Amino acid sequence: MMGPVVISPGDLFRAAGAALGFSSSGMNAQEGLILSAIRVPRVILAGMVGVCLAVCGTAMQGLFRNPLADPSLIGVSSGASAGASLMIVLGGGALLQSGQFAGLSMVALGAFSGGFLAVILVYRLATSTTGTSVVTMLLAGIAISALAGALNSLFSYIADDEMLRRISLWQMGSLDAANWPRVWIATGVVTVLMILLPRDSAALNAFLLGESEARHLGIAVELVKRRLILLTALAVGTSVAVAGTISFIGLIVPHIIRMLIGPDHRYLIPGSALAGAILLIVADAIARVVVAPAELPVGILTALLGTPFFFSLLVQKRKFEEH
Image 1 (cartoon, helix red, strand yellow):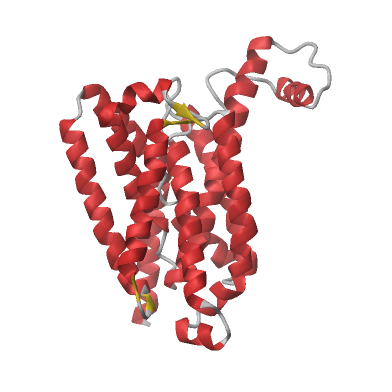
Image 2 (cartoon, helix red, strand yellow):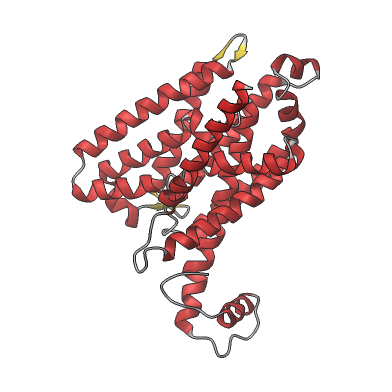
């Protein structure tokens, strides 16, 4: 595991043995503390966040029947960012260290609440007596994202220098605040996500044919939509709460896995979960050393990697439509 302090593979194995109750003789106490309190929680948290973002991206692409969709389309990321900014401006800068609830700072709780509220608003705007319109949901997501962006700009305008710095760092996305309570929270959310979402694999496969066809196949379309949206709000809201805004994982991972193993969600969901975890762990490891001794926020790195890939998707889509 990479970082400013070099730790040998032998010490890594000794630390793992100590965690399992074996003797840790010959291991430096400081290195053991670095591994157990900083690096191991960070790696696990990166994996959990990667799973949340990638799997929710898979769900949104299936729901919208569009490989260019990602969880931000329903406003959860922008809403969470606005919630975090609000808490920072209202005094969250001090609460970031002193105000804790279940291992999360008040700023993180503000982020989760903002993301969840944004999704609920999008869902309510898109739902009528005839059901939930995917097109209206997309438009509502764009509107809510624009509103959240305006609120972010307002909070940044009235913030002082320290608050503005905290807002900027939060929006860049980073795992530097990883700790064991956040790991347990993220792990709990991933467990719920990976138990419930694969049950909708058949429904997501049916959605590829269209909503009418899915209804004819016996799928409870509105119930599945509601469940997918709530699971996405829970998972992505938690991810932003513990790690800030990390973009493009939910877009590029499902698309790559779909190209490798096909569109069947029975395999696409677990494949995306594994690939999302690996990608974010590797990206965070690179971000820690690429500008050492400083640390690059991992959200910047994923955006730098994801933007060219997104452009390539657009080019491929245009060529496909031309032919």
